[in-house]
Amino acid sequence: MKNVKILAIVILATLSLASCSDDDDLPEVVNEEEVTTTMTVTLVPDNDGTTVTLKTQDLDGDGPVEPTISISGDLVAGVTYNGSIELLNETESPAEDITEEVKEEDLDHQFFFTVGSGLDITTAYSDFDSEDNPLGIEFTLTTGTASAGLLTFTLRHEPTKPNTGLEDAGGETDIEAIFDIVVE
Image (cartoon, rainbow, N blue to C red):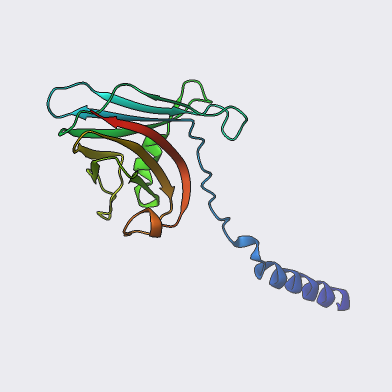
């Protein structure tokens, strides 16, 4: 009888300790960042002019090979362009469309457009996240007078929203591309 009481106490103690364990906590979901090798910015003029494409491709990521940057043509002064951005991971075959992930996780992303000095253009957001904050996969770009300068596209992950621009957005840069633009 004494052995039965001791065994019962040991079983109860074991059950009590097991029920207080932290093992029941669910693991934190880790959302790994996707690899983005290629950004293509397509600018379609609203005047039936020539479409301009800006592209950066970096297939080795942080490797020794510099990104390839290409621009198919010059922008025309006094024109509004409807812009769209496509992001790809070309380390996979077929290439993975990262743009879809950005759309799905719209609250965690925002594109920023930085116009360098000397370049006479303005940009405006055309698409917004589910809380009506700017997203930037679609935008308008309006050229002023003939000019030249740098135009930077930056995708931030987990920026502060709303924000007044890249300076106070916080978050981490997923991809950034700088293009040397000419407006004729």
